[in-house]
Image (cartoon, rainbow over all chains, first blue to last red; front, side):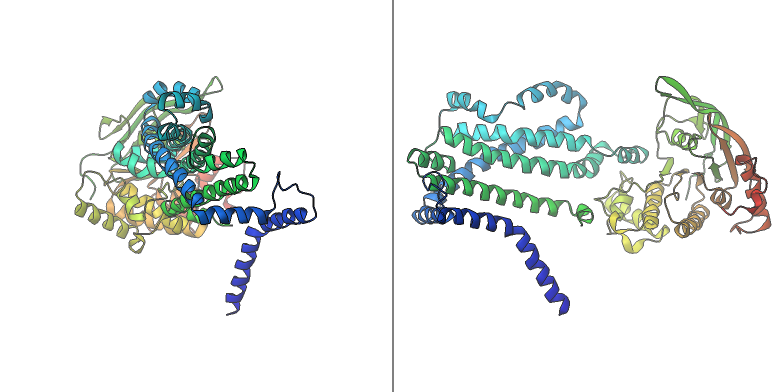
Length: 263
Length: 260
C-alpha cells in the first residue's frame, strides 16, 4: 500500500512536470490581459481563444477543416511512405542504384516544398492534387534519406557473422538489415509526417477553400486573431498527436530496444 | 558428428601486411603451422601480435595475404561452412530470439529438421530453457554459449575461437573453458583458440603456439602432454606456464611467483 501511494505521488509529480510549464505560461498570458497589457485585436486572451474554439467546434466548422487537412496529409504521406521506403530500401542495398540516384536526390532535397507551390498549381490546379503533391514532396525526402541511412548502418560485425555462416542475401536482408534499419526508418516516418503536416498548412494558406490553413487565412482577412490562434493551436496539437501515434508504433515494433530506453 | 574426411589445416609461409598511413606494417611473417584433425590448438600472444589476423585469414574473412592456407589439402577461398567462428563479442542479433539466432546459420533445411538441429545445439550448450529469450536478457556467459551453438549448427570441421572468453568475468570464463572442452570431446571438432590468457591456452590446448609481435611470427610451439581435465595448480601445469611465461617476460627473475 505504501508503495502504491508513493507511486501515485510520483505519477502526479510527472503529470505536474509535463503540463506545469504550459499551464503557468497560459496563466501569465491571461494575467497580462487582465492587467491591460494586451491589445485583444493583436493578441487575444486565452479565455477569448477558448470561446472562439468552442464556437468553431459547435458549428462543426473546425472538425470539417481538420478532417479535410488530415485526409490530405494521409494521402500525401501515404504515397511518400510507400515510395520512400521502397526506393530507400532499394538504394540502400545497391551501390549502383545509389550512384545513379544520389545527385538528383541531393539536389532536389533542399528545395523547400513551398517553393514547389507555383509549379504545383500550374500543373495540378488549385484542387486536391496540388496539395497532395506538395505534401508528398515534403514527406518523401526525410523518409527515403533515413531509410537509406538506416540500411547503410548495418553493423559490420553482423555482416561478418553472415559471411561465416554463408547466410543467403535475402535472409540476411530480412532478418538483419531491415530490422536493424527500423529505428532510423521510424525516425524518417516521424519527421516525414511532421513535414507533411507543415506542408498541408502552407499549401492551404496559399490556395485552398477548406482546411486548417484556409481557416487561418480566412480569419486573417477578417482580423479574427482569436480564430487564427485557434487554427495554430489545432495544428500544434494534431501534429503532436500524430507524432505520439508513430512513437507508440515504434516502441511496439522495436521491443528489443526497450532495454536501452531506461533512466 | 564431424566429418571423417581429412580436415587438417595447413598453413605454409603465410605473410600478411597492412597499409597504415602510407607505410606497410607486417602483421604476419613466415607463419608455418600444421593442425591435425580433431586437435585443440591454442595461440597466445600479446595484443597486436597478429593472432586475430591469423584466425581471420583461416576463417576466410581476411584476404590479401601471401602463402598458403589449406584445409584437407584444398586452398581456402573465402568463408565456408567447414569453418565456424566465435568472436570475442557474442555478436548475437539483438532482435532475434536465442533460437532464431542459432537458426540464423541454418539454411536449406525444412522447418521440422531445422527445429531439431536448433534444439540439439541449445541442449549442447545447456540453454534449452532460453530458446525464446532475447539476447539482452542473457548474461555475458550465456550469450557466448549461444554464439558457440550458432557456430556449431553446420557441424564445421574446424571451430575458430577468437578470444571468446576475454570479455567474461573470471568465474564465468573458467566455467566456459570447461564447457568448450566438453563440447570438443563430444563433437571432436578441430579447434583453434586465440587468447592472451596463458592459463586458458594451457588448460585447453594440445599445443600452445606462442606468437611474438611486429612482425607477427611463431616464436615457439609448446606441446601440452597432460591428461584432461587438467589441474591448473599441478606441478606439470605450472612448469609449462613457467616455460611460456619466460617467452614473454624473459627478464623477470622469478616468473614462478606470479599468479595469473
